[in-house]
Amino acid sequence: MNQRVTYTATIETIVEHSEDTRSLFLQLSAETRFSFTPGQFISIAIPLPNETRVRPYTLASSPEDGGPLEIVFNLVAGGAASEYLFRRRVGDRLSFTGPFGLFTLDRTPEIETIFAAEGTAIAPIRPMLRRALANAGSTPMRLFHAARTRRELLYAAEFEAAASRCPNFSFEPILAQPPAGWTGRSGDLREHIESIFVNGDDNRGRAFYLCGVGQGVIDLRDLLRKAGYPRRAVQYERW
Image 1 (cartoon, rainbow, N blue to C red):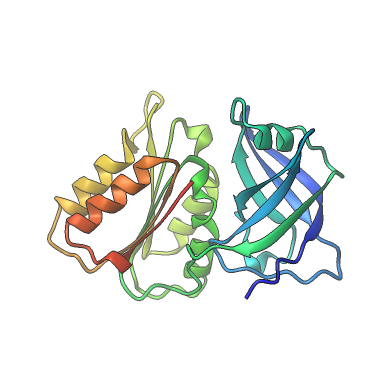
Image 2 (cartoon, helix red, strand yellow):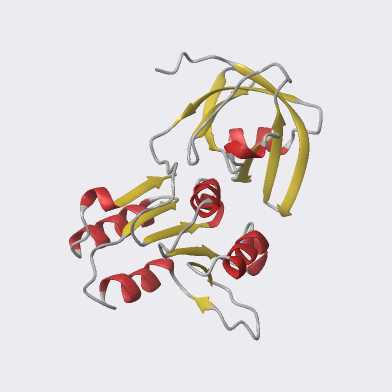
């Protein structure tokens, strides 16, 4: 059982993915022990003028990295927590508890597994895939990452490199606003998942890991379960 230990970390690096998306890399002290399972999140204390709020942020880094913990997030208009984090600078300190969460994957899947995420919801999927691909055999794995623009396809180069060296893994980005000359998938994540895995064949022996913001990920979960995929085969997390 988690003892709700409070950790304090220093912001070591800030990466600007776009004008409203960034990563913070949080460095713990050398003597601090902290471990987590791919897919878990931490709860960061956000000090505001009249209160302290606690907000969850999934770890986009891997337990094996041995370096700072990475969180990735969007700036939400009127969102006090994201606005506070966007004002942080290298050297600032943040307090958090954790890790928490049951949306996890700690080993290579034994059946065909589909990962699907929208925008920054790729965060828990990234360390899951890293763990799964570290000892990948012949089990097929596919990643569908939906974003508005190519710039918002976070970690795309990393996933493309993994697909080039792992014959059982494919990376299939989906753009809502594809640029001229784009030859990949475009449109809506649900449309592609439904076309391929619901209407495309009768195989219901797959597993899914879904992560997204709002009702869309719930609708996708329900679509797959109603199509005959077992409940436990469709894991999801809604942000």
